Amino acid sequence: MKERFTLIDGLLYAFLAALSLLVIVPFGHLLAVSLSPAEYSLGGNFFLIPKDFTLEAYKYLLTSSDRFLIAIKNTVYLTVLGTIVNLAVSITLAYGLSKKFLPGRSLMLLLIFFTMIFSAGLIPTYLLVQSLGLLDTYWAIILPGATNAFTVFVMKTFFQGLPESLDEAARIDGAGEVRILLAVVIPLSMPIIATFSLFFMVGHWNQFFQAILYMSDSDKWPIQVLLRQMILSANASIGAEVSSEAMEFQIGNNVKMAAVILALVPIVLVYPFLQKYFASGALLGSVKE
Image 1 (cartoon, rainbow, N blue to C red):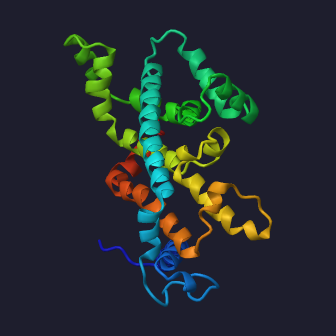
Image 2 (tube, helix red, strand yellow):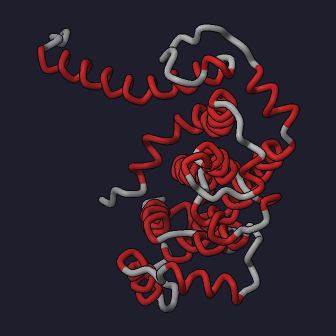
Image 3 (cartoon, rainbow, N blue to C red):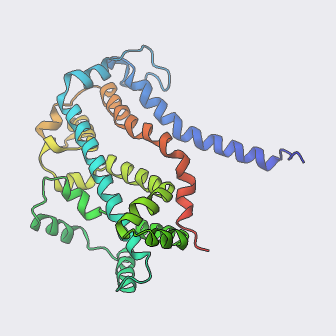
């Protein structure tokens, strides 16, 4: 039977359309400013349609500024390395905790749950990173957040939902725990692994606060820290103290917006490849029958 299009359906579509515009329009404005000449990018001369088109801002960033390309390279390195570490730690920990015969399993689950309620705090964490000699390295950002309780619990629940007969069949064939994990569990867990890969990648790509806290070497800054310095340089006229690195970027709004667009594009391009896993992966591990 053909379903009727009701007033409630129309209101829901209108609400979702308005919500989409709230997300899309600001990006359209950023793109318009980045494609306009510097003289038109100031003073609110337009909103979505620039008065003239030019790629000078993108050309400047990609050919005249080594610091921008270095920051992009640093961000890619941090994102790839950090995501690999996150997945390795989360999968192995969750797989081990999914086995009921693991000694001390209840205590470990209790300790992991404890971290969901209480955290070490900023200063103790900084002192720990400093005492380990990790300052000014990417490990200072990656290791303290190698996994989290939410990820471990969701993955553990998903692994427990896999048929035990697969595990038993692999053991009869002589497979050990490592081989079962690599050859059986991980291939069957691609939706949830892809989903958390996206979470980890976005988190590392947008890494900002910890990079400022732990990294003083500007040659190792990720792109988000460089964007912050560019914004600070714009506020220098109202009294903000700006470092010498930031002063290099006292440039037009079109270049700043072009930098934001270029920083967004790589992580946005990754999303379509993981989208098919996203909805199912986000729910599978959180439901226990």
